[in-house]
Length: 314
Image 1 (cartoon, helix red, strand yellow):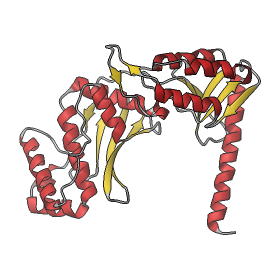
Image 2: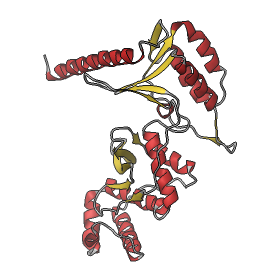
Image 3: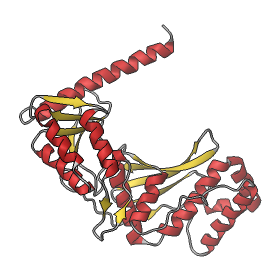
């Protein structure tokens, strides 16, 4: 047996054990109320209908403005769907009759409350998985003290810190190192709850009334020395305006900075351009940075104001 085959079998065995533990945890949690018989679906039938309907319905805010919907898994993180066999056709009809996100969520919530419909999010689990219900009631967190940590001159990341979480933004290579992207990851109290890609970052900024910062202008000039000079000059400009770096001694020698920046390459330069834009829209704007931090956490946890109820087993 090859080592690769051994790893494949080991992974399959772990997932099989995880699936059995998850099924048992779900049954123990809901066995006294669940409407039997119940089918469990993955990517077919009613689950597929829900996915398609989410793409069709509109999201209108309180001011009557049509808004962009987030990705499906941030609306509902279900990997499988438990549904009462006797109610499946009725649920499907009601789902297909919805035209707004709120009405679609209401149908799901109604049948969830009646123990006839269970969207379920699955993670690889051990012997004692935790069963939690998300979005049965609106989830709120209060962020009042968010701030951007001082920039570190030669790292590829930047942090927003608050009383509830630490969000790390960093750049990654994509498309075979031909391009780069930025990703945010929630750390701290909500560790391992999810990540935020470039699309969601812009989605949240737009939602709270701020301009997009990831667009065609977020790129590195082919002349790396030109971009490195641009970043050095910007660093010194904001330093003179009173900005405090964590290690501003690294700005004393411009030639050394340019040499080191070019050595670190395009990914480093890309991350610094992102930091420049993030500071532009969020620094010294307490209300907006608090709201951005809050929405980032809620997005990562799939608990936005338009997210629907689901069961998470983890």
